[in-house]
Length: 502
Image (cartoon, rainbow, N blue to C red; front, side, top):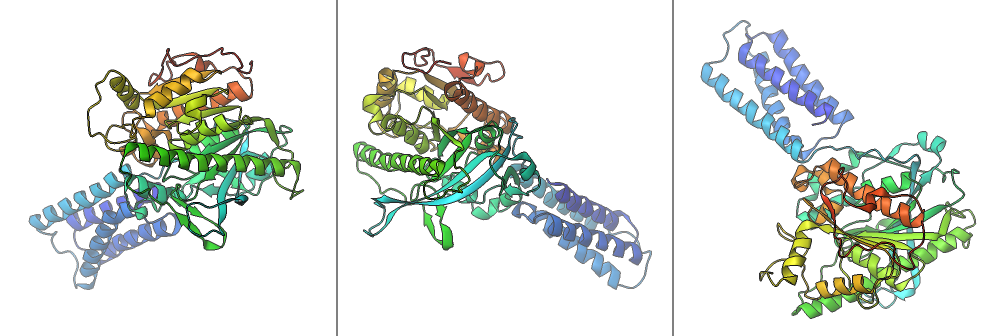
């Protein structure tokens, strides 16, 4: 519960205690009613009303009506309510207060982890149109491929200190609704949670230019799904660009009020047909990432906008990419197709497209859940049971196409640079996003704090090592700080030929 929600709950308990155990007195009844009203109005005015508090609001209304009825009746000093009435009211108070306490525990107003880097964080969003590509998801031949991106960057600390923090993005509510089938209104309070980012501050002058990272979210998700990782990277001196991919992202809001919603795939008759559709979809997303890098390169040179925020600020010799799920597959394919990307991290993505045939020439880190890793071992040993769901479905994630394991093996066998294969115990597929913060229902066996630390520390350590040449002990093997993370010794290979020296 927030502080103001505790105030409402405390006012309810005090009012109920007075009704049950205080002798009738108009003045004190009026005081108790005023306390209830003041607590509610304070909460509504300074905080935010939430669905999770509805039982407490109902209780406040019931208690208020009882107090009002006592006030308008004549006389003071009558006996307390009968024992039966006290018992009924007490049970009602306990039930409704307990319900709100439990619901606010399940869906808390959380705080994003404090970034550990030294930079303030600025942000800006942009609408991009790729004039060289047509939109293949629509039937209109005149449509060009459009994207929305958000940039997070090391900001000028003095300017950032004078600006209000941006709220946690409301776009996450659409993604939560699509992925977990919760009503969006259940997370309507998210935009009352502050991030550590500000809009309107210039890029920090702490460095002449900064390494660049692109982020691709999962299918049915949003570029804002991993704010914990994004804020950590930006505070540590990276410029991070999140990409929304229309029709596979949950919802993309364009300027002038236009929105593009997620478009689910049709039912494919065979696994092979599903696989080919994924190859096509990842190719589109990979081209999105390459187009974004093309655009950023133009902005960096001042082409088209001599006063652009990012002009001259991008170190285009140190470019990386990372993504979750379908975004992880986008990462692997983009690395295979474009050598401008020097390193990449896939958070439980697949391997669709050319990467499955060529492998990778850049350092690559693959993180996945221990459940998925166990399934891979079981399938390799011929123990996979029939009729199991795909990644992200059910209580245990399953791979939903037969080609996954041979593709994974091909990528790791044919790759020539350093590669890491890490598994995380207690994670499920969505744990690589911020979902553990949103509810303990999603924390599974790993706390929200620990989940956030695992995600941000391993991703940052990887890019620190391969883009900045820094020491990254976390990548050298198991860490007592993170006993959940295991390295597969057969698939983790470092010191490979062609890997940039540190």
